Each structure stands twice: as structure tokens, then as C-alpha cells.
Image 1 (cartoon, rainbow over the protein chains, first blue to last red):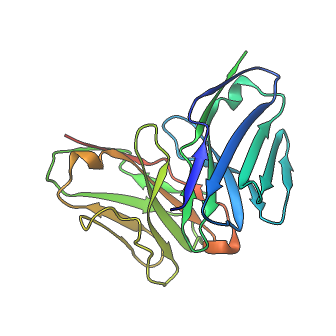
Image 2 (image 1 turned 30 degrees about the horizontal axis):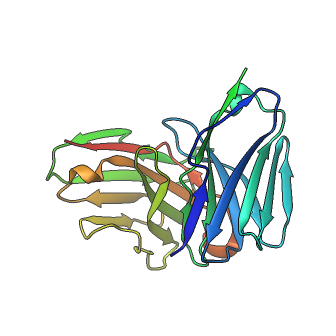
Length: 111
Length: 116
């Protein structure tokens, strides 16, 4: 069955460092991958989308890579700030209309 | 403009009762999704509507769950004979179009359902 795995343990980093979050998937070939941010008590908010023919996408302090051979995406936040503390979800299309989401990784950035 | 809105924000109901959850998508968005998120878990896909096409109901966990979308806009998710395992946050999202066209989804704040 299709499966998405994200770091289940929380990631704790110091302010100013780069946070790297991992999303691994198995059993299918998505046309694109998305990253969302979710704060407690709120719905997810879209951050970045990367297509299968793109290796890397950047937006301000955010960078996403997509390796279709390894079936992995890495999400980087450079110069991290306490305000970046949240849960980050990756999401993949399934070749139809359905998108499946990972369970998310909680990030804590300490001042 | 206005984002996706959901109501109620919180709902407490007794086991066995029926509940209706409402979603107002962003105007002009043809695709609408319902997800369920249990505590500490990821989003579980429930159902998808795209324009006038038949909805994708493949994620509905049982026949107690149903959803409709009237006039291509507002959607209602109905859970009949609620069970305690139905307790979760129910999230609605809309996007310009779904599938492999790759548009981001805009989420509402969710409805927290507690079944006692």
C-alpha cells in the first residue's frame, strides 16, 4: 500500500541553525509533492510544491528537494527562528484526485 | 478574500447521535476535500468533490459517513450514529482544481468533534 513516512520524533534546534525534515514514500510515483505547516488548533497552510521533474525549489528561507530515485523529499529552513516552531506535513498526489499526507514532524526552535 | 470556513468550531455529542459539519470553500474553487485528523496523527482523506463529477468517497471509513456538496459550493459532512472513535478534528480544504494539475489546498480551521 502507499505509505509516507516523516520523522515521528520532534526536532529540536537552536535559533539560527538550519532545520532539515525528511519525507520518505513507498509504492508509488507522485507527480508532485507539497509541504504544509500546521500550528496547534489550526488547519495546515501550504508552503511549497515541487514537481517530479524538479530537483529543488526555494522560497525565502525555505528549500525543498525531491529525489524520485530515493523516493525522498527534504525540507530545509535556514536561519531558523522560534516562530518557525510548528508541525510540518508532506503530502503526495496519488495519481488521481486524492492527496495523502504524512503524520508530520514537530519542529521546536529554541531562542 | 475570505478563506475556507467551517462550522461549528467545536461539537460535543453523545454516542449514537447524528452530527452535521459544514464547510464553506473559497469562492471559485471547484475542488473540495474532507479530512480527519486524530490527536498526533496525520490527515486521513475522507472524500473529494470536483465540480459536477461524482465524488471520490474511497476514504469514508463506514457507511455512517456521508457528504454532499450543494450547488458546487457549500459541503456538509454527516456522521450518523456517532461512535467514540469518531472523535477527531474534521478538516475541509478547497483548491482551484484537484488531481495532477497540482494546485495547493487551502484549509479551514477544522471542527473538533468529541463523542462522549
